[in-house]
Length: 498
Image 1 (tube, rainbow, N blue to C red):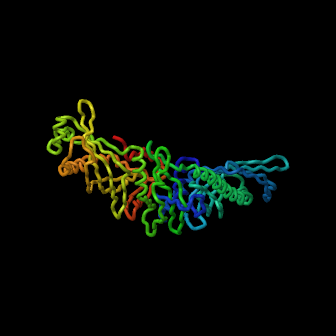
Image 2: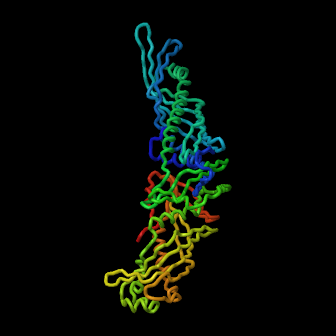
Image 3: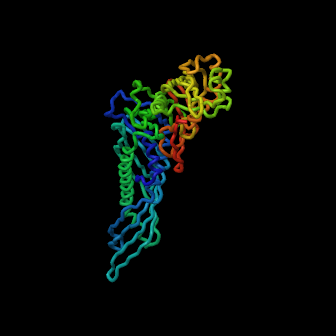
């Protein structure tokens, strides 16, 4: 099962994330839990199993077997030295396969398999006077082959280690078709080489299984513990605690919190939660990915502490970018700075508070809105309004990214400070409502529309995804497809400086 292509590696990443996992003791502290969980359903396990077999077969074909030589006594002819060379398996088909999970690991069985071989034959024997020899080609059909393996992956300090627990390859029978040669040759090859050809096929398949598992173990241990999203933030994808296997699903957890560019985790900002496994009973999709609200909170915290949560509102109408447009709302502003250009600047003053309720994502943003005047090429800060902005978010899926949109539901405002005297907050609130709803919310949506990538291996694409918001979690339920030509996902910038 030699892994010889990038597509095979991509397939394997998903396969083993999906189901080659067993409960195991780990050196991680028991109270460390993941905030992104994934459940692979029976439908997902079947998809993974079929993909594994397809990629495994394509990676080992053609498969060269060792040459075979043997001497045999042929009636009438006498002692004949025969040899088979250039024995190549050029096709394998597994019409039946199954996968089973349990406490002891994963069992994968591929049965009823057929394989086709090409080879060359030759023989020679001596008479009283001369040595007689001949050569030609033959084809072999392997019938009723069964490949069986049992494997496990354990969590060691946040990485995965693969163990091949048991394996077997058994060939039931073969059919040989010899081209050319003497009349006795067919039965001679059958008698001399039938058992040897069968054992050579079995040994070659087992050897490839072992080689593939060794390479795969190295691949799993090389998986990164962080996925860099952009220059500001990275996603912690360390495996947490013990995977959970049932007879119909597999669940595993990763840390799932975002880290800053300095690689200091923000996970300590949050209390540990009790482990709450997802239910996969009756799940009609291949996979269910659950993201706890703390995942989104960690992203907001990283961007806030990296000083990436402030904006200048540039797409507001000209009437609001000159003091003349504010003469009836803030008269003293126009009196002191007549017809001067203005800027409105929004600064978030603390990490956003995100709460996921049933069918909704509520976000509270604490921010300051500062009025700035361009007076004789000098930027003068005039006043600052403190805002508590309540919003409602809807989650969406775009390719493999969890995206969404945000809309204003309510806000309160108060005067933080002013260099032009008291302001009429009643008049200002009406203006603030227009600014927030028509300009600040669209600006936020521009930053949020890319979303952030869900932790899927390269090449796998969500299909017909559904989103459920329930009990502090956003759950993505989806089927999967695989393509080797998938364009790499770009860096995602959730919130950036204007």
